[in-house]
Amino acid sequence: AQSVTQLGSHVSVSEGALVLLRCNYSSSVPPYLFWYVQYPNQGLQLLLKYTSAATLVKGINGFEAEFKKSETSFHLTKPSAHMSDAAEYFCAVREGYGGATNKLIFGTGTLLAVQP
Amino acid sequence: GAVVSQHPSRVICKSGTSVKIECRSLDFQATTMFWYRQFPKQSLMLMATSNEGSKATYEQGVEKDKFLINHASLTLSTLTVTSAHPEDSSFYICSARVGGFSFDEQFFGPGTRLTVL
Image (cartoon, rainbow over all chains, first blue to last red; front, side, top):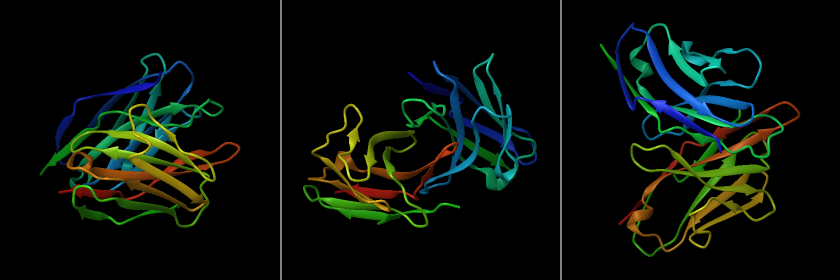
């Protein structure tokens, strides 16, 4: 079965500092991996996704993530945090193209706080 | 980009009543829609997969008679919470799948906050 683990339910950074949100996955087949952002009382917005092409994926709002198969990781980073980045971030996995299911499995989320 | 809407955005109802939530894909056709629920400060849990013209597939532990799903058209799926109770209070989010030869992505609605008194 597939799963994702997000280390750290709460992360706090200063404005302008590096943002690092951790995600490790478990999958018996080549995975597709996603990062979503959720603002309060809103749905999810896709930040970026890995679909077996380039291992370094660039997304919206200056975020990027690197797929590391040897570490089964897909950590999300941003060089300089902005106040508007404060939100909840979810990592998700599903079976890659051709897999038997297209269901997304979500991690427990990381709440990012940005201090002025 | 693909837009998914949900209606209503918030609903408050009395215990024992039924509530219908609509999920629409506004600018594309979705053969598959997904329904999730999210408790406060928790992750999204998939409730069911809804395929146009066929019965929904429910995840383990989700009561299909309580959470009725209808996907009558390629742009509309509905979730009806029947005989709602306070423990059904949650944030319900739908997504619509767009798939092709080399592309498969879900687009999420803004969610519906259900409060059962």
